[in-house]
Image 1 (cartoon, helix red, strand yellow):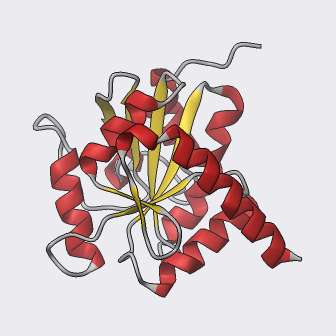
Image 2: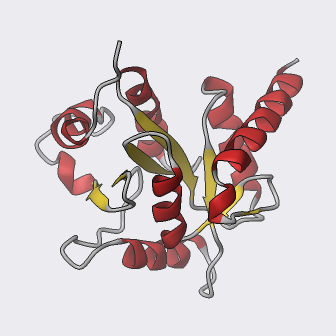
Length: 192
């Protein structure tokens, strides 16, 4: 039953995401996820019907990612925003399948993308290169996971969060204080 549910969720998301991202010319990976690089995030944000788009970096082996995912996914309840989970493992790695299943189990409507494999091999090198490419000169490039990348409708990157944004928060497992302080002020609430 769970496999049927995951399959149906995956098919629905593929149809929905492919229609929404047709103009960005994204290609699919081994695990039926769209492959993206830094410039694709801008395109996706511009194509969105929402005023802001947030990408959240995730890996199944990343403990902060696991703790912070529910907070990330809850943003759409009250804010007019497009949310995407961005997987960072190598495209053909079995961890991608584990991460996808983990996300869809609790959040069947989640939109999941995968970071394209780069010239440099390995997830750490791929992720570091991505962070350098996506970060404007006025942003620090901090090599951490469980990041929020907030884009506006014009495809401009407004915020990148990092583990350093939570230094004053008492519990690293709870990202809500950081999200309330930094992310939510950039977003528009949903109209009732």
